Length: 219
Image (cartoon, rainbow, N blue to C red; front, top):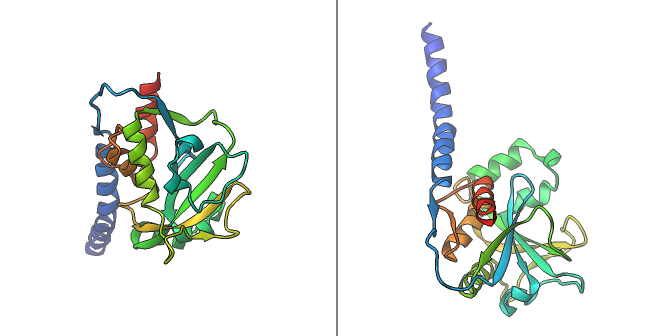
């Protein structure tokens, strides 16, 4: 009986972190920031996309500033650029969810690991993208946020990793920042929206809070 109590106690200690993390995450996800409406004309549109877990920010090529476009691989048909941030090892070793291993997942969530920016080129808007209508100042800020996430070499150029893209229309670049369970791919997107004065969550590691928030706005 005493042994059983000890086992249950250890199980409780082990479970307290993930349960607390989940509860706090859900609460903070549903606390919105930057809700105030402004009088500035929202004549630009950016988008959010998700693969079911991982969010990316999409901006039309014509709305990208020259600094953000510099040193990026391009294609004539590219009209939209999608930006996602995440754990370097996870990106490279896990192109499909079927490739996910316990070690990759644990390292990404609980260790301070190096990161990449995943840039994908699109020729047109996709049906499952969620539109965010923003003003010129917000567009400028989100461009700046993404620009400062690229790690630069000694010549102040973006560092592309040749041949590591999943398809012909995407590439990986070295990025600034460390990935942890408190600083995930989705919290990177959320932070970008917050710093750009665009409606966002107080904090979130998930994709659904931002998607639901902006789907509601577009109705």
